[in-house]
Image (cartoon, rainbow, N blue to C red; front, top):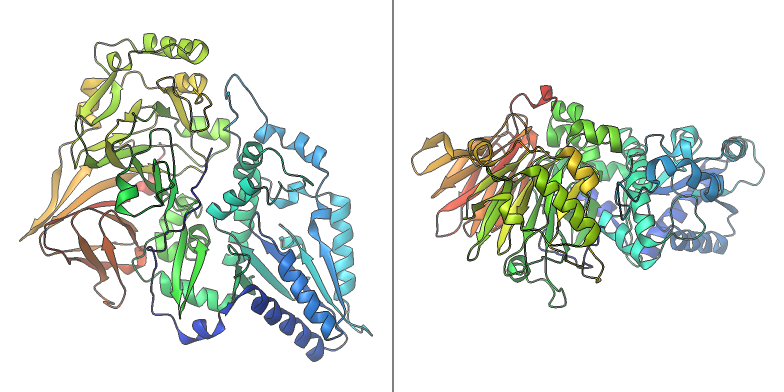
Length: 619
């Protein structure tokens, strides 16, 4: 279960040349934002006589509107302005009704899913969660408020997740959206700060978060996307920090995003501890001493990271998903938006087992048909490992040994799951010796593991959840002392047992081949296969290398070298200084760009992009 470490890495700051209109419009501070909104609402009543001012306060899951509303109400009362506040939470179906209806999406099956990690993506939107009689009653009430010729007009605030759905949208004078980054939402869940939609009290945290991933987050993301695409957000509030909410009018949010998407940029990472976690990234990035280790680094997991932009003297942070929902075509290209339904289609993270106590689990992921049928997902879960750093005897496990019997391994895995018995896994699982630059492809169905004492750059295809089926985990407990879950039911059904040593060497561990080269530079293809819709390349150069996005975004990772500058050739002011192991996105609309070496040693950069013909990929 996703458990981010409560640490903010402020090194990943983007500094676009922001227009003065954006800087001047940014309101910083919770009280200042509330006073600003109260003044807007009050002036509306003064200028439009005989009409109420009706406002929606919507937001991402875990958004807390109450403090801001209280401050607005205090302000209105001091000026003797009439008001009414309506909580949208009263419009949902009762909790027991929702639990019954949502059982199809988040019901438990201890045979298939022993610790209840997986579910089905909910596809009915907020509308499916509402009590129709109550929803109709609210609509009638708002229509009544909307009428003119009112003797004593007032400010009407409707607040809660989903209150800005299409059904009510035209009844509001303004829509205010309180956004929260995914990391902060999960931390709030673990603090007990909110419950699932429709619940009066919070469920156990794992149950709450699981439903969030498959239902609550899903409906909130879809609604936010609608509002952004249709320019329906009048005031956007970045609300991660309760004492320092920041407000930006929707017009200026669009202005800021439109500027940012012209730049190469980096997202703000999220760090996670884990039972096999290592020490390399912790030391490299100066993570807190209190962290037991750093197992995963979510540098660019699209639905989990955020984007930090410098606006004047302030830092303005938004979920990365908010950004790509608004700027998807410029960022990813039209074909990508069409193919992947508006989602950023590749995810990136580091797995750090350097100087750790063991390997990652022996695991496998599921393909498109399985994910669609079982989870109502967008597609398959493919992965790849690129080895960045190694210690002694590092190994990467991939496929079955040629002489091994995969069926025998599966039976042993089932017995181990049930009876807690050890397996001589190296008898069955093939491995390659790891060295910096080793690229291993892991299409869905391939058994694999990252061994201890290395850092790998993991690159994978789009899935909302994480469909990792552990077949064997060395009988380990997790960091809380509980046995780690094994998933042989699903694993057995998706394993491609024919992927053995010979096939792996011919298909999944490839010899780099030259794509293009020149004086002092070269680009190599290090991993490409019909089973993957992305392609993996490597730049090697002394001074600089030029490239062109050709309408598809690139992701660059500095895997060897000190520091480089990624710069648009047509607009050199649009650039980003990239340090060792930073991940930088080059938006599709940038076109021609150059990477310049700012250090003393030769540079290697890993490049990922969508493969030619990805739009027709049906794997």
